[in-house]
Length: 324
Image (cartoon, rainbow, N blue to C red; front, top):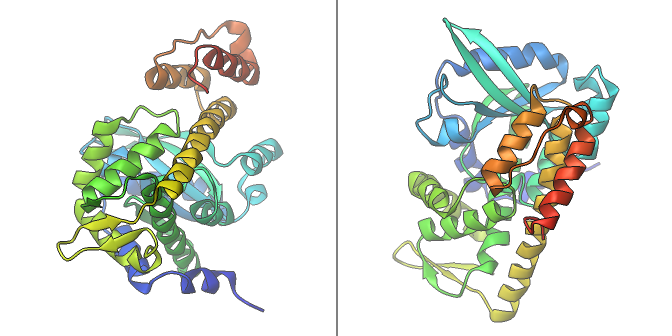
């Protein structure tokens, strides 16, 4: 009987696995420990891994000022929850999102954590059409906790597949040209931001590409054996995008589908978050206004029925042309 984990790793360049492992093991602030400890208490034996990503990793945002972005990876949704409806929602549309506050040394640490199964995380990194998983985890992240070495290797494989999927999906949409790594990742990040209701703009994509240039350079080089049909490495460290007009049109069409899909999924996830996130309706309304400029009213009746509120918002955004 074949081992799916071994098959997934065999498909990947060993250098790429090594690179994502090195990034994942880099030191982080000790202030993250109380958050991880709280999640271990919350999920117990179902917890496979905790991954740090987002603004508190990629910028100088203080843990006291910002909200830490975490992914909680579990072995089973039904083991992770005592409430059956939460397991059902997580399986229907992963991830579920929750809010966490932990008092620590006379301050409060805050985190927003997304719950996903190990199987869904691995599948999303390699096979999901939408960029929700692979766009986030192609970027450097930190593995704060793993159950054991087997889980660790599965996470490394998913992170490596995220890099491959990110570049294989983004590069074909670029014009045939010789570009440096920073420009390639900037343009690909812009494509992924446009596929979600997110506040990040082109300047944010460029900032991330500049801040992570060394990591992206190593990751691209390590992934290059699987990218020979779309990228050709040049002697000066740049890459020639091997884009043909027909394949570029097809890639751009796929990104248009992702933009439509992403907006629908974002609204559904925000509506679902109203069942899991403290003050979730107000948070969702704030996030939609911040990301789209559309102010949505939260009435007492709709606050009591968050799914109806989510459907009303989706209709409102469709009428205003935000969802196309």
